[in-house]
Length: 251
Image (cartoon, rainbow, N blue to C red):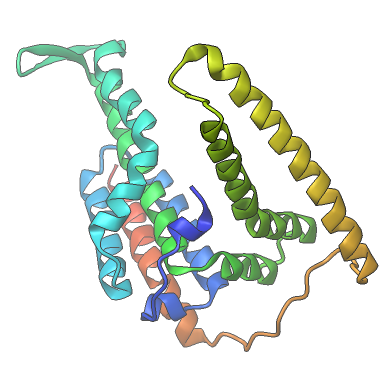
């Protein structure tokens, strides 16, 4: 799933917040969710309510997030299985014996994993890929990492488009991916795509060096962020952190 698919352009107050403010807020919110005790169901409900409020301000429908949150389905399946395969004391639920510890562990994975995915999707939905990289640079993330990530974002769609053209060419020549014995053609196509991508990377690098590449992408100047915008950006994460702190204090 590419970054362009995850981004939903808009002009809301959430979209207009500086990227590095949203990155800090999302990171803090994820840490608070992870630190929340699994027994504090009310705290997870509070976290979801905060997310719903942010989505409402951003103007992004719940269904948009629900469709993209399907990426966590494998973890959901694991969480569903744990009550039945977990050890320790067991209890009856609707006539079925389930493990108490397994049920709590499954709920812990389901609640924290889902909230973590939704927080990440919220950041991606309201922040463009280029803005995310600029925000990481403002947060002093190592230059090599941001440079590699920037080039990957720029050329990921090029490689996907070339893979799509190669697939169409195979289909025009009688290729039918439904048959197992044609898997070799797919494997050869992947190898050719790798070689073409490698050669393109070499050509692009040589062209960049010829144009004075110094090893770092230019960073556009950005105005300083005042305390009011920082407060507006981290307020949702602060609510999540307060809920987590109260839950830890009560347990």
